[in-house]
Length: 402
Image 1: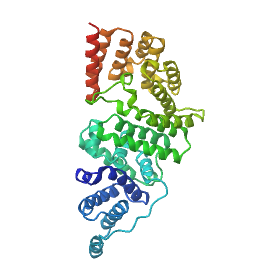
Image 2 (image 1 turned 90 degrees about the horizontal axis):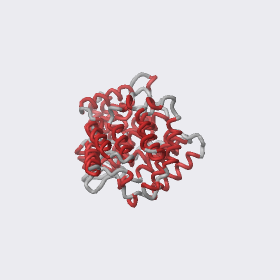
Image 3 (image 1 turned 90 degrees about the vertical axis):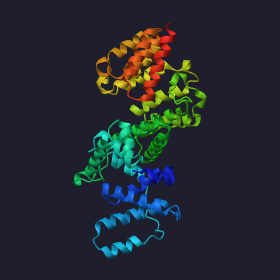
Image 4 (image 1 turned 135 degrees about the vertical axis):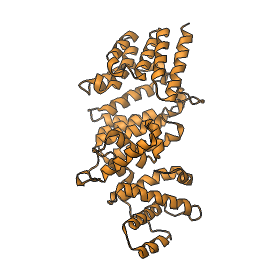
């Protein structure tokens, strides 16, 4: 919800402050939409006032000025309104709530009455601080469409008593949305890396607020993936696949923390999806080089992952596709390709299905087939960076196969 002029104040600080102030307003019963509008006005006022008179407590300043805007909108007494607007002395510190207000706001944005796309969009807007245009770009939809989606979501949160904000979404929904927010930051351009960091921060808070092992599993998964961030792109900004990454660039402290968190989660002996995916990530991070990857153990974890659903081909095709890669490394490429055949009807029009088959063909030494599959994957990719990567993979396989 931070507009472009306001970003010049201090984007990093505001990205932390804004959701906390908004959460404080919503927590005390203010309408979500009205609170967001009032806070935007407070930010514009900060743009005018702060350069010459920086406040001692920016959060309290924003909360106080936003509150005045909300009061002004409700009062008809013009004289009193003018007196209040004239009072721009340093406001007293606002009362704070116990716990992390941002986490409270996250639960609100994940309200179960909202559709998943709306949950993610509202979270990115209110908690992540992205503009409507940035969110629209991330979802490949027009800005007007995204604005309508966010407006509808806020209307749901302001609905009848059965939909009040004191009935936030359940933990499973919050975990899913939080991981989607992390993913948006992890795979996005460098300017969005802070979004991944915010997702990790919120996941840490979540592990303090609940004993649910899956919360710790999600934090571990984020940490173990985030540890490889510096090696994910080359100096030209091109994607580097896991097997070709410079592992010396991996953050060993983040890996160690991720492993500790994962071990704590697995102590409950009832691993869920995030714990299993974190265990797979830990095995990749533990390998000194691609050739030392413990593929049999990874395959065992994938077996557990696909067993979580009754119909994994349709309910969790991504897990089945990942398992096919592990099968290819353990039992041979031909066996892995047979596993992908089970997903042809569900994923045959997706670029990742063709990319996995290309990898397995290359593993089998069939470079012409690999080049063809890489080219088909590139043709279907919607992400520019992924498409360019797949085009290069196709060219490399084609040249090596001559």
